[in-house]
Image (cartoon, rainbow, N blue to C red):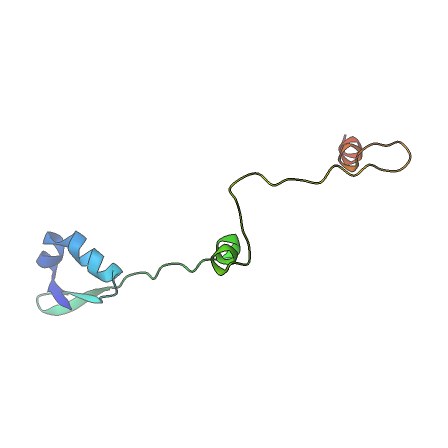
Length: 88
């Protein structure tokens, strides 16, 4: 589709919607092409969103339930407590 610059200015929203829908819009000035407007395709899903869309992962919307902390032999402290002590 070819449109003149003044047409683009007058109907920018309409032409952007057409480009988003897949139309290629060539803008002209004095009947010479000066620009081409094309829509950007929607980004593909990735990561967890992709896994959930495929049905490979599920989420109920709540927080995950975690296993109890690991207790170390000997002093009975948890692993996380020992790591925090070592950092200090």
